[in-house]
Every structure is written in C-alpha cells, then in structure tokens.
Image 1 (cartoon, rainbow, N blue to C red):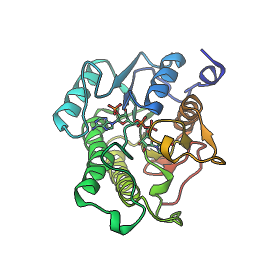
Image 2: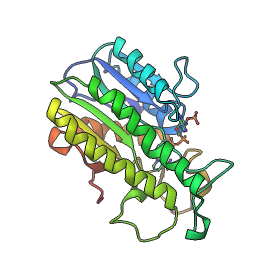
Image 3: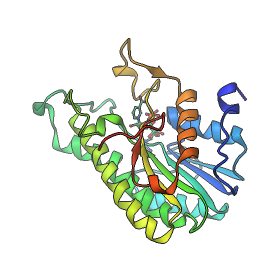
Length: 242
Ligand SMILES: NC(=O)c1ccc[n+]([C@@H]2O[C@H](COP(=O)([O-])OP(=O)(O)OC[C@H]3O[C@@H](n4cnc5c(N)ncnc54)[C@H](OP(=O)(O)O)[C@@H]3O)[C@@H](O)[C@H]2O)c1
C-alpha cells in the first residue's frame, strides 16, 4: 500500500457492507478498485467492466440488471461508483465545430455517457439502504458545466455529460424520498492521465495520476453529507456550477 492509499479513511461509512465500481477496466476505475481494496473499509469490493466474469455493457440494460443482482447478493450496498465514460475511439472524437456534428455519433455519446449511467442508477439506487450513509457517485466532467463553458467545442461530450448531471439531480430527488441519508452526486475527477485524456493533454494542465485522482475522489465521497445530494463536485470537493 502506498502513501496515497494509506491516507484513504472512508470513516464516514459507519457500517461495512459492499462497494461497487462500474468501469473497473478504465484508468480511474481500476485505481478506485485498488484504493477501495487497500482501504479494507468494505466487506466486499465488486468490480464490473466489459471484461469481468459478470460483464456489463452500457448499451445492454440486461447486463446492468444482472450486475446489480450479483452485487446485491454480497451484502448491503453502501457505495456505488460509476467510472464509465466515453470521449473518443477510432471512429469518433470530440467535435471542434457545429459542422462536425454527426447524428449517429452524437447519439452514441448520449447512449454511453447519459443513458447507460441512468440505467446503472435505475438498477443500483433501489439497492441503497434506507438508513445510514450510502453514496452513488458517477464520473461526469467539468466541461459539462453550462455556466463554465467559455471555450465551446466538444458538443457531444459536453451535452451528454450535462444530460448525465440532470439525470443525477433528478434521481437524487427521487432517492431522497425513500432513503433520506443516501447521497447521489456527479463528480469531476480532474484531468487525469488515462487513455481517455491522452490525445488532449497539454503542457501546463494540472494532470493527476490515476492514484491521486482516485484518492481525492474517495476523500470527497467520504466527506459528503445528505444535504449535498444531487450536486456536482470536483475532485477537491468544490461545487461546480451547472
Ligand atoms: N481522464 C480524465 O482526464 C477525465 C476528465 C474528466 C472526466 N473524466 C471522466 O471520468 C470517467 C473515467 O474516465 P477514464 O479517464 O478512466 O477513462 P477510460 O480509461 O477510457 O475508462 C472508461 C471506462 O468506461 C468503460 N466503457 C466505455 N464504454 C463502455 C460500454 N459500452 N460498456 C461498459 N463500459 C464502457 C471502459 O470500458 P472498456 O475498458 O471496456 O473500454 C472503461 O472502463 C469518464 O466518465 C470520463 O468522462 C475523465
């Protein structure tokens, strides 16, 4: 265990139970799983990706339902982190201008960044206990902020993550009626050295390692209280304007 991992307390979770990470094959997702295991704070850390034995695909709701059912067999679910997300692949990348918008590619970004996480919430939020601290956190991005958008571009990524933020807020309202202590938030992980950010990383940006980002995200999660549900925070715990 390195110093970063040793610093993770997660003390606000007063009971043990289960932590679940979706997108465990990603740069940040993998680091979150390692940090959660190293913290020894939960009885089980359940990791899902497209390559785990019970595999998930954001485009296949039945796979998310199966994953939720498996996680529920492990015990009381106290923490769910959705670390999935999509910015670019060999077929598409962020648009620099309106002229680059392609309907099918934009729909794919929405399917992966907004609808998939909404389906994860659909199947996971009902599993959060009614009492005691429980958190659902999904990784959004600062560029989803409408109030903070001064550079333009990246239409599909910005808009699909903004849609994700609205879905988080809406789900938080519903969740609070059943489980008033449960927390549902969107988190910005910072700029992190992963394959998602690699083509766009410029000198001068504050680029974090995946381990530092994971430790900061878990620290923010540890500090969240129920009155902060439905909000959008960065990796240092500062609120981001919608
Ligand atoms: N890195 C940054 O600087 C940065 C900045 C702001 C926000 N974020 C956000 O942070 C989150 C994690 O990003 P990352 O940098 O760790 O990216 P990453 O390494 O590319 O990880 C993305 C994860 O999403 C999964 N995923 C993609 N399509 C999927 C699908 N159809 N079904 C299931 N899983 C799928 C990937 O699975 P596979 O391994 O199977 O492809 C992978 O586990 C994303 O939401 C991203 O938008 C990152």
